[in-house]
Structures are given as structure tokens and as C-alpha cells.
Image (cartoon, rainbow, N blue to C red):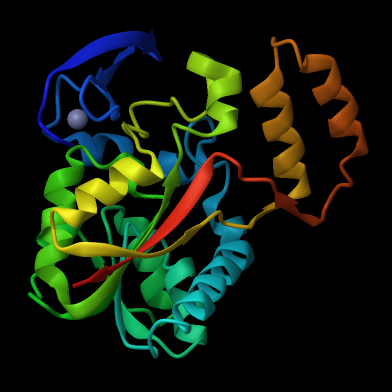
Length: 277
Ligand SMILES: [Zn+2]
């Protein structure tokens, strides 16, 4: 992020996690960056479980509602305009924005996800942020649950900056390495999951990085994330298994009602809204 010295801190899933001595940014050491996106985001990522999704398409309602919530949040700052949703998968978050009057496109490396979204009438393109060629074409660039996946986050932000209109916005939602959840779990934090998750930010470090592209903090907060209760029970069990809180987890999973959307206390997530000055 700041191109200063970093050192190896610990190993997980066969990857070294490095930390920058100057800015505190944490990132996975990737020996083979070339072809990384194609290797990691095949169809298995969206249906194979583990670090990816057990069934991404089942999350449609919740992700679309998240898109609508973010669009309503944006309404306090500007009227609906043209949006680029980065790493849009099947376009569910984008659909939420469209519901609230936005128009725009999504870009996504997985062709099956793009085909799914196109069949629903969305303008989705196969590719990465760097392949979008509409300089200054967007009022908003949304990078929701994608920032942590970039091989080179500064290159991604540079590409976003080229595509942003004067006065335009960036909406970014990602994991918070300074959260209490991270402090509690340490190296066992569930979000240390390379090779899909590669970058661990804090709201401050991301804001410093965005400022280098002329982007100023307009608002920040924590997402109210909704999950299916079955998925939530599975996550609680998985996250706390083998740790000191396992008995609590066992009790909690019994208390979680099945088949309902429930709010997930996303203490280790944050969102930030930046405006181009
Ligand atoms: Zn740094």
C-alpha cells in the first residue's frame, strides 16, 4: 500500500502473511500473481464452500437488499447516476442499486456468473476492473466485498480513479484487521483465508490510500449484514471450533432458528464512502 518494507508474520493455508512496518497493511505473499484471478474465481468459488460460497445464487435476495441499502445511503450524498460494480458476480448488489434508480454496469472475471446476470437483463462484462475502458465514465464505483481479493490494491484504485467522474464516489466494503474479532481470534481469524482473501485493511489505511488518488472520506460505518440462519449457524460453528468459545458456540447454534434471515453482527467489516475532490 505504501511500498515500504514488510516482513513475514505468520503462515496460514500455506501462504505467508506479511505486515508493513510503516502503515500496518497486511497482505498474503503471492509467488504466482499471473493467472491468479482465473485460478481462484472459477465456478467452484461460487458453489464449492470453504473460503468461497456454498451456493452464491441462493444469496440473491440478501445481496440485492444490501445493494438497496447502500443506494439509499448514497441518496444522502447525490442523486442516482451511473455506477460500476466491481467483482459483481451475478449482479445482485448491482440489481439493488438499479431498484433505487441507478443505472450502470458490472465487471466480473467469472463468465458463468456474468451469463447468469445477463440473462436477468443486466449489463455485465467479463473482466477485471483494469479492463474497463470508460475513462471518467462513472458517478460511483462500488467495490463491495472485493477489495480484499485484489492482487495489487493500489493498481486497482488507480484504475478506479481513471474511471471516476469529477465529484464521483467510491463505495468500499471490506474486512477490518483492527476489529475486535480480529484481536480475539488473532491468526485464527476466519478472514485470513488466502488465496482468495489477500489484503487486510483498516478504515484508516484504506482512507490514506484513497487520498493518494484525490478521494476524500465522505462517510463510514459498519454494514448490517443479513445471512440465512442455516449459513450463520454453520459459520459460528466453523469460526469457534477448537477454540475456548466452542461450548458457547455449541449452545448458540442450538438457539439460532433455522430457515430465517438473521442479522450478522459484522464487527469485522466496515464500509467507507469516498468523494473525489
Ligand atoms: Zn505500508
